[in-house]
Each structure stands twice: as structure tokens, then as C-alpha cells.
Length: 442
Image (cartoon, rainbow, N blue to C red):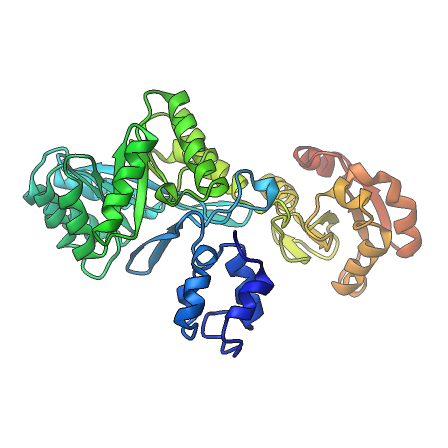
């Protein structure tokens, strides 16, 4: 039976040395009970305590980290089946595929695009996490050359896939000091791959079309000294892949089945496969083709699923200037929920119309939610106006409230005497039209 945080705390040295990364031994014990850290993080725990803490010291899904120069991608350490139960912790790493059979110029161009792709979504930079190299040429020299070209334009983590051990060895020679993933080891070649993974300290992907096959391979690789494993369930179709991924997650979390307690990897050729893998429950994804316009919605999906539902994405409350506004221009009011802020800001910026955007602290809630919860009212709006010193900054005092909370207009007028209070549209998309037809006219 798993131990509670207090029971674990009693077995720790209780020195509060902070070397584990937590301020107290009790804080570390609570994280250990939640299976979010490993016991090895405590440098002073006794051997006797280690034996008693064996079950509580290992997360149900092992944390796997792929590293390169300045980059780090983590998968695993998940503790729930559904994010509303608690939260999901590590977003699945998205790797774009490059084949060794491609021409050197094409490899360099594609690797550069993958490396440089970055788009801002509600204040968060979305990007592809790494590059997966497929040795479709089955040639060690080509693998080595492809890695060399990739490393000339990108330092992102890599995965190496081949059924030719010599090709994997050649690729690893270009990745000194890094922690890549190699694979895929199956029932026939697992021993050679396990030896290579152990020597190079790389993570090893094992592949099978049944859960029994994956469990058997993971146990064999672990017996060879390979700890960092990634499971590749080989489904017959989309439905079968969903079943295998869900069963692996459930057995690891609910039954504490250690042989399947590892992150999974999905090879995806279609958007349906990618979307399913992000939601259920891949730790890593290899997408067959990279295209900027197709990657964006998938990264947005990933970000939305792996945002903690108990911690809304927020922006800093305060006053934002859009399109170089003057003291006579209007002040638009909204909350600090990130999506609400960027919806309003993008519409105003795109219209080319100057305005101030006053963001009130609503604890990260949207306008209607915050109003219903009592977190966005006349008092808070007035407080935000005063904190931004708008009384002295504005020569014409015009405040525009979101249309969804028009009911607040009278109360805001009472809180802010001398201010002209307007009620704007309910939807951000209507702000430019409202600005031109109402604010510019009056």
C-alpha cells in the first residue's frame, strides 16, 4: 500500500537541507506521496528508509527527459487519467520527421524551418520540440551525415529510428553529451538496442502490437540496465491505438503495473492520429510531415489540454497602449484572462485604431465568469483606473466597459465621477466597428 505524505516524512532525514529542491522535508514528502518526484532527489535518506519507501519513491509513469544543447523535453510523471481529476504535467513532445534519404540541401532547409517555427498564442510561444531522424536508407554514413547537417542549423533534441544498429551508432557519434531517444527495439533486436542505449545513456523505445509484448520487452531491457524506456504500442488502426494507449495508462496508474509504467510514443501520419495521441495519452509524437499551417492548430490543442484547469492563463493586470494612443483616446476595460485579453488586443491592434487597454485583476477569469464570481465589479474597475493614474494622464476621460457587463455602468459612474462611461459590444470582433461608429463620432 502506498504511504501518505506524513508517513513518508517520518522516514526522511528531516534536516530541511533543501538539496532536493524543496524548502522542507515535509514538502518533498508530499511530492513523493503524489509521485511527482523520485526518492533519489534526497541525498541523505538511509538505506533502511529506501527499502520502506520503494513503492512511494517511483512515479507510476517514469519521467523521461531528452536533452540537447540548451533544450530539454520531458514526458511522464502523470498521475491521473483525466485532467479534471488534478492536472496533466508534461505536454507530449512533438517531433517532426526527417528522412536520411533526402538530399542534403532539403535536410538543411527542413531542419531550419522546424527549428525556426515559433508562433505566439495568448502570450505563449508554441514550437516543435525536436527532430526525429528516420534511417529509411539503412545506411550508417547517411545517418551520420544527416545528423551533422541537422546540427548545423538546429540544437533541438533528436530521436533516431532504424533497424540497423550501425546506423544508430553512427548517429549517436554526432550527439556527444546529449540524451536522445533511439529505437525501435522489438522482440528480435532488443538486446543489441538495449546494449547501445546503456552505453550511450540514451532513452530506448520498444515496440510491440500487444500489451504483453511491450511489458516483456520493457522487463528485458530493464534487466539489461536500461531504465529510461518509452513504449510504442503498434495499433492496427486508430481505434486500436486508442485502446492500447488507454490501457497502458490505466494499468500504470490504477494497478501500479511497473512493466508498463513508462511514457508512450505515437507515430502519426494524419491529423486525426496526432489529435488523438495528444489527448490520449502519448508522451511523445513523431509527425510524418512538417507544415507550418498544419502544425499550429495541433500545438494549440496540446496547449489547451495541458493547461491546468485550476490555474487559468493570466496576463499581468495594468494599462496597455495599442497603436500609440493619445490622452484623448478611449480606455477599453477587460479582465486579465489571457484569451480575453488577446482577443480584445488583437482586434484593436488589427484595426489600426489607437486605444488604451485597461486590464483589471479578475484572478484570471473571463469577463462573465469574473462578474458572476464577484471578481469583476465597479470597485475593482475603479481601483484599476486609479492604479494606472488615468485621472491625471487622460485629457478626455472615456471608459468603455465590455457589453456583457453593461449592468455595471451605473455603479462605475458612481465610483468614477467625471468619467464618461460607455458600454461596448459583447464580442471582441465587433470592437473596431463600435470604435469607428460610436467612439470616433462622439
